[in-house]
Image 1 (cartoon, rainbow, N blue to C red):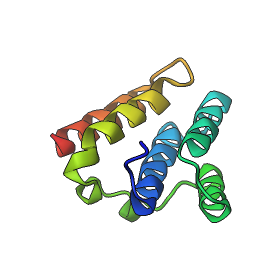
Image 2: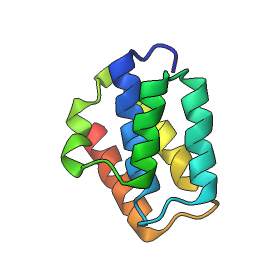
Image 3: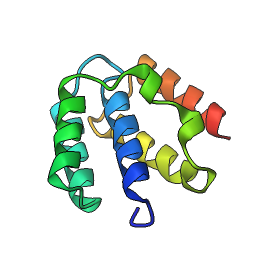
Image 4: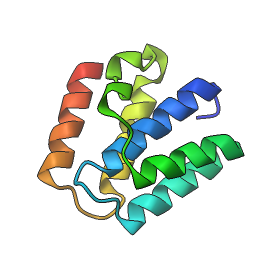
Length: 107
């Protein structure tokens, strides 16, 4: 993850937050996962504030475009999205469907 530039770190977090909202509610375990990832990515205060905003209101769908994910980072994005989906210990149908679509678009 340290190979991601600032723009890609924020893009990853935007995807992660959008998947946290896939079931229309951000669970505590998902919120904790996001906060751990924010720390791991060493986001600055402005970036952290954006992520907090996305945890309160999901990012606009038009800003979460799989075509924007660089090929070199696609597997990292898929692995991290998969991790947020299972963070709360359950995968609902909407999360599974959204992930399957993302995976198909990135392969």
